[in-house]
Length: 141
Image (cartoon, rainbow, N blue to C red; front, side):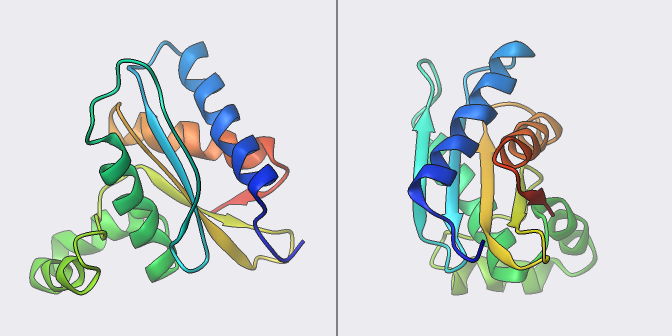
């Protein structure tokens, strides 16, 4: 597989929501972006705040833009905060180095995009993204 289709993106989103409901997490916003950071699919659960889209998009955009999970970006930002402030500006406000997004990779390790979530803790957001990516038969990174 070499591209992220709408069907795959919707599978990821739906599986992430199912995982969040099974674990009784707070209402979530989940997004899947392609390898250029463009939204492919998004859902905001009933009761999730209006900021969930922007936060989830910022996490996923940053992950795919830098080629690593948002957890790795969060850790890197601690060591070089000025650089990451600059990245947020360069990304026109769409770059958010906070835990809660994972890369979407095919079996060959090629990055197809990223999944990001917002609504719970960073660990909860990341967990549901990983579950969604795996449900689509792909590898989270």
